[in-house]
Image 1: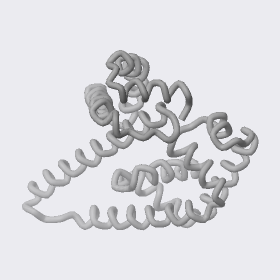
Image 2 (image 1 turned 120 degrees about the vertical axis):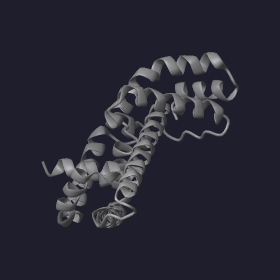
Image 3 (image 1 turned 135 degrees about the horizontal axis):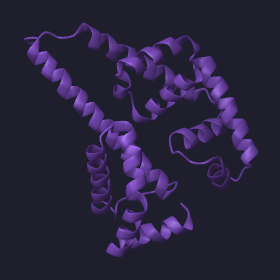
Image 4 (image 1 turned 45 degrees about the horizontal axis):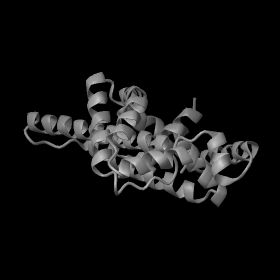
Length: 211
């Protein structure tokens, strides 16, 4: 964790409201914009971000930030957005179930099975990456760190980070080549919200590689 982040977290753990207000003012609008990109509703985005900050303050003494405060906040907002989307989907399916007189949907069941299979395949593909390659990939895609930040944290050059990312993308594409049509199908059907949050990012990345 960077020195500036350490001072902020230390102030929060000491219960300093001025530190919390400073952090809130600095990150509230960017995080709302980020949440809006997932939820499509400004009101829901603001409510989600506010909940994240409230939770952060309530759990300030227990929070352990291993990377950066920025990555922690963005990851928390993303995960909260995924929970909102998942909850909304459950409500829609429950309403549809009731309207159909309790008849289940075989299409939904098939979609869940496909999403589960994809989740397993992506996890397997990630494990086949060399250790440093996998670490760079996760820090870039899942923690949303810039190449320069990854280079600083790992003590390597930016060029090495670029090479490792390129290698990771090649290996992932090779490992998931047979599943690219399935990725496209799940993206269109909205089934990605059932996939683990980190795997969601990976699947979306693979989808981009097909375009």
